[in-house]
Amino acid sequence: MSQTEHAEVDFASAQDLPALHELLEHVQMKNGWAKPTPSLYPQPKQVFVPAHWRYRDARAALHAAGRLVGTEWAERRNLIMANPIPGNDYATVRTLVGAYQMIKGHEAARSHRHTPNAMRIVLEGAPNMYTVVDGVKIPMLAGDILLTPNGCYHGHLSESDQEGYWIDFLDAPLVQHLGPMFFEVHPDTLERAERVDARSPMRFAYAEYRPRLLESAEIAPGVRTLELGPPQLVTFDRVVLHLAAGTQWSCARSTANRIFTVIEGEGVTRVAGREFHWRTGDMLALPSWYEYRLDASSDALLLRVSDEPLLRMLDWYRVDGTATQ
Image (cartoon, rainbow, N blue to C red; front, side, top):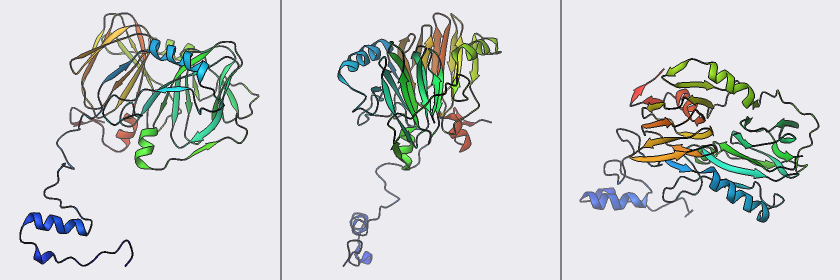
């Protein structure tokens, strides 16, 4: 008898439900009428929780790691902002991960490519510091937002004396859940690149998007938003927000998972009875189905990354249970 075969089970012998349930185990079946955990429920479960990480902590830790962790043996010198729930050591929100990363002066992080889409926002950059995407050097200056869509080789290179710090965003938790994960290191370790392209479509330069944002119309008193693109990624977006000093912006709960990064300014996020006091470089996780309020104590610029495009494509995006267009 093969491992996949089993003896015939006499279901007619079951005189009560416990006996039937026990017989079902012999044929690797589960009953659908007395499940210990419901598979359908009236609204999204709040498994992931709101969280806040301070850039000053991440920067200090990465600076120390610069002495202790070499890029020749670590794929990336980075810190994962894992949502603080039991059993989780990776995802920041259900579908996305955010990680602080650094590179030392005159250092390179090898080129690789993978299934997950990736994006990064530069917190501290310098002239002659680059992300190399498919053989092209793309400048990394403070506030710049850079894309590396899935399948693109990308590495990092500093021809500067300064350290560089940024935040990476990937849809890797989603890819891990669905299964189609592939990863490959470039045969040249760091992909060769001679050409610098400051106008690459993979780069949204801070010096260009900031004035566009400030010139855009308010969507609420004191609030302006600007979605960056094209190009777009199917699985997550990038929206920059400007909150004027003193603005209090309340946001309804929705099915989208969101990660915020503070580009400049200070303020407070109030969510689930908690207060997160944030400043430049900090990261916040706001998982799905939480309402929250952003209070800006000074003029503030934030980057919001969310899986809303994916949910809209699947017709799963809801705000307070109502379908949106």
